[in-house]
Length: 334
Image: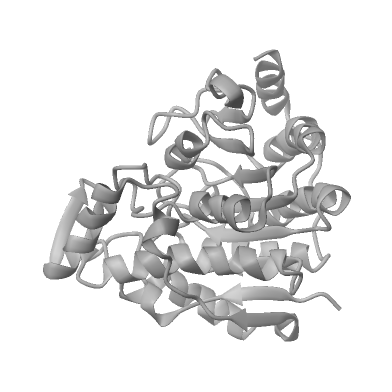
């Protein structure tokens, strides 16, 4: 019976962006409540987090930037950009979030688990090499992908980012590399403004960035058309040795920070589509890392849907609309 490695740590709840901020510890508290009642919790296995080393952070981030975030420990609160704050605990939480995501990947690559979910915060996919932004301090998914490359010798890692906001930091981390295929489906135009269909990588990395920008208002069938017609064929051709999901849950129809219309079940359907390819290419190895999602019910339901899909309990979503098919044609032309 396969089990899912689950990574949590109390330190993640000590990070704060400020009072009444949508990205707060209440997100993890909602997930904890869901996990306490999860119907297959006997198939979830907790694994410990650890702090990332400075060298591991340095695979993605400039040393001067790392020091700048470390200095936030000396003040009760620091605004890093208009959306992103840090308390005296935030550096410690961010270092452990990065290290925890590494541990989730290590649990898979050491053959202890096929799947892992890192319930970390602060999230990471907006964090650039030298800049905090969009609630993100260190780029957890990018650092974990680099760990797979540097620590285990992998040279084909796929990152799927379905957060409603484009993962600019993750894309830029691998824009010149063919070792990591970055695939993002997101609302566009929308924050942070990157993720156009013509952003496809550079140099050796040309063709290894795939952006699927969608207008607001798209629903389950539109997303699943993207997964069947674009994601699965590209992923199969790339033949990854490991798959990572930057799992934001803010494309949900109830999320306050965007205008997509996904149901909770769609997150399971997307996971199942990814798992189908993972079982063909990489022994089903999928590591999931938490990104956004700001309606607490939608967040916890979406997480449950992902876990159920990893345990082979997944819904069927019907064919996409004409609008979804139009975006598919546009991406294929690029």
